[in-house]
Image (cartoon, rainbow, N blue to C red; front, side, top):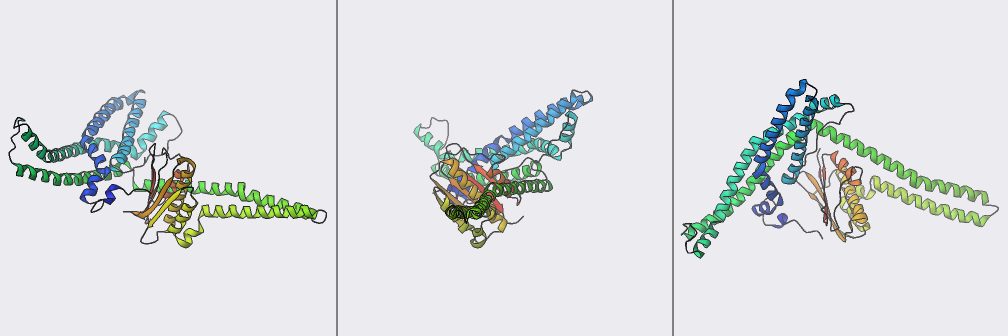
Length: 421
């Protein structure tokens, strides 16, 4: 069975003092904030120098490729920052760029310079210097003060053990213990401040690096259209290759049986039996196809029963937990069902897992779907794969699908599906 995360098991919950301290996100954000001034300084120097060299040379032909290289460089920096936002702050920002046009150097340069996201990238990289200076200075001051207070008891112990030869003048145990207690309090305060600064930085990065709301909606709608078209082609292919071929075979068998009915009744009877079996197989395939479009049990009995049915058909033991106070919208139920179905299918084919779990619960923005297995890991989302299509479908309601599958396992597929969009 999947273990509950430590931050969810500590007293006062994941947002309490202990929850924030044991949350890995706190300790991933802290190093980034300490060195963000370095990132800001590096990008400011590189972008300023490259622009100073490239722009004046535009009057001659060599300036065009240099300018294009400079723009691509700061775009690459912005793309790196988007990945860092995901790793450090858990903020996932999709690249908002327009599609690349056909044509030569001038067409590509026009495409680069005409894209609003290009200039938002530049603004973010230049803003990173003053923002990073504030973040790094504040983080350094907080962590230095916290470490000093927390290490005060240790310094007192070293002072005693060395008979006062450490160079430290600490002779008040009560003051040292008060300093240690104050260090614990400051550690909690620092952890909360780190999370708060990380949230502000992540929000600003989302605004500048993620494009406008209109662009995000346009991209979401395009992904939804592509997902619907892919689903239509899948249904058409399954009908043509499956049920249609079986029904054609049934028609041929019945025609042959009709021709032999008087002259060769036994052979006609065998053909009818064969046609009957083919009809049942076609019905079974149509039932599976209908379940693939929208399972009846999901409409009739809800997500808990539908997911339990999926778990019962899985080749390994799957624990199912659905904790929802009210039934979510039909679109959310459908997407959640197919995410679990695809994850369990991949589990059976590739993971080598011996156990798995499915958890559906209420998150901050809506319904969260968590699928875990103890397999070998190493799974990736391929552009034309099943999980990629489901991510596109989730994007139509502003949902997010994330895959975490390190080599050696475990594999976790998590989807956050808002109930309002």
